[in-house]
Amino acid sequence: MKPKFKETIPVFFINDEIHIGEEDGVAGVIEDPSGSIKYLISLINGKNSIEEIIHLVQEKYPNIKENEVLEGINALDTEKYLEDNSLNPQSIRDYELERYKANLNYFSLFTSLEDNKYSVQETIINTKVALLGIGGLGSQILYHLSALGFHNISALDFDTLELSNFNRQLLYSEKDIN
Image 1 (tube, rainbow, N blue to C red):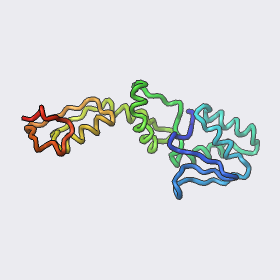
Image 2: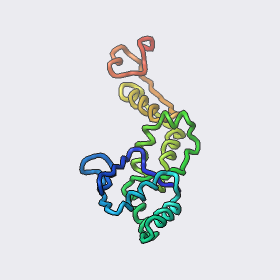
Image 3: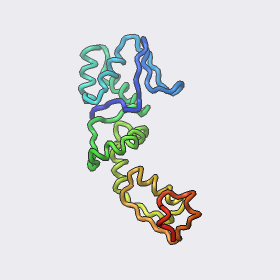
């Protein structure tokens, strides 16, 4: 496991304070007069394992115990600030990583070091969906499902397309009437 801060979580160092997050009242503020927490945060970069982080912190700050470093990492993880940089997508191609980057960042808001944001997108890609009705609402739903990455959608609608349907549908053109 190689923890790192999520791409959606900014970290700011202001004097002896560390601000994590960017929204007023939501950002975590940590007092750090010794600089030890700032050093710990600098090591949580996705390149170091937890064991390496503990070793490096104790090397620079010998009075800090292993369990204190673990408590710090666990506190950051409990707030959902961290993700495991060693997790890789199992079946998502490079194209899909770029295509669904916003999805992955969104899913990461709900994951911790133990979770894998890629598995959520992989589930979406591999899920079969049946959509009954692709009129006004159904065509919007179909559009959004495909934009999220659902690849296997079966749609069924027994209605006939009429000119008056075009004010609420985006899947069809006038050549599809009747």
